[in-house]
Length: 101
Length: 529
Image 1: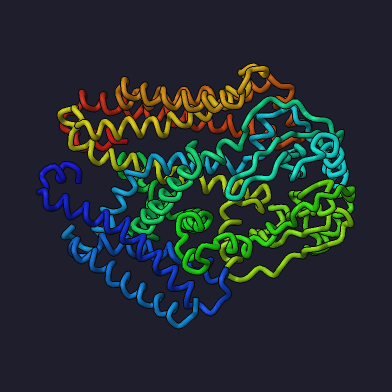
Image 2: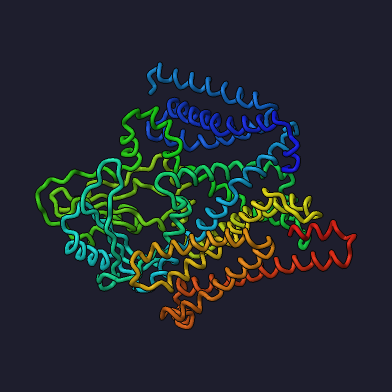
């Protein structure tokens, strides 16, 4: 793959870089938001909900990373992370609004 | 990345594995060695005598010692001896730690039978491997962050590896020896699949262990600025009364062992911590030995009033979420494992290390094939080759040097324990230099041979520098010390075999090249061996 890479166009390299950034930072964002949402919505006591949220977050991170490299383009990688981020942020915000947290 | 899903996953597997492979190899190898942390420490500090275990007597001795030497301390910690590590450890904190900081402790080791301070040689022992495998010799908290990031990358590499190998069970029963690159791939798949549950457990659990450090968003969302409250709820034993400022005599600690054990329906005490000893508000926290159960439970400690000896805090029922996280923690550490299971842990750890190592070799082997004709390797491949050699053969030799330094450095040397560690890193550094200046295969053979010679000679060195050689330990049935020597001997023999294989593979290539020019595809594959 390395020999091939030398002949690859700049746009390909930028796309790979973009996917890596999406996976590392976008993936972390989704994982963190998922842990917050779970924590706020789970009908458990505070500490338990926090531990559950943190434990599960790494699975979310994993799926997010896989998504970033499995999807068709670098743009869809970002979209596929930002849409769930917005949804998760809204849902956890709603929990605050309802006074669950 | 216009290819299909499986190709994309194979790509991800290849590159995550390459970039973090060297670091993960070191983490896995040292982590595997850490399963014998106590045994290694015992071998590296042979002055600490192994005594018949008697928790009550040892605890009384520790209390007497601390009352004489650390009467005004804010906290005492006592680690009872066990079958793996015979020292009676006492530590004390002269002044309370400032909030948010880690307290400074003075640490001594006592003879578990006489209570006398043991003047053991300064050495980190097995603790070095344990600490290195998650702190990477970096300042707090950077090493922990880097190792946890490496764990996440490992998790990704594992899952993408599983996705890539669609015929996972068929692959498992396929091993084609002496086929160069093929054999490496078969070996990689076999060690990967054979102990896959271990790989998944160890990787995921390492993330869970540091989750509150790397994924604190939910703590912040739920507790806001009062993060302390979260830790107090998760680790209830941390709630201790403030000192009253009035002197009072501390109750004898030994009788409390039985009361604690009753609370756990017969469990054993591992560590005792005494807060504000000699104060009217003294408290004694007895923590359960890790060897008792799989699930790590910080809330299982029993707290006593230090003056009256009354129980003031009993184990709370561990909530489900904490039990799940605690069982990941417990499974990762393997404190509960007896000798057989501990060896199984060790073997699984070695399999994980081998999986990472074979992966790195395959990456290079595949790409070397293309340049075998010209014999000139591009810079990036040569870089990978040097890093492969130093991170694997060099690291193993450095581990052996660490043990040699333990026996050869003068006991009176100032900062002796640091010099043991320095010897390890100097060797590792030199292995990079050596790999830079020697041709690839030569460097492999030479470094593996060095490791082999050093490891095979460890029992001999031990015999010459300590009274606990194999001629004494085997007849006495001291399997901790004998086991260490024999494991070193076995490791040395394995490394010698690997060095020989490496050398032979090199020979066949050159012989075949001159004999039969046309057989290039086969010789090339062996060249990648």
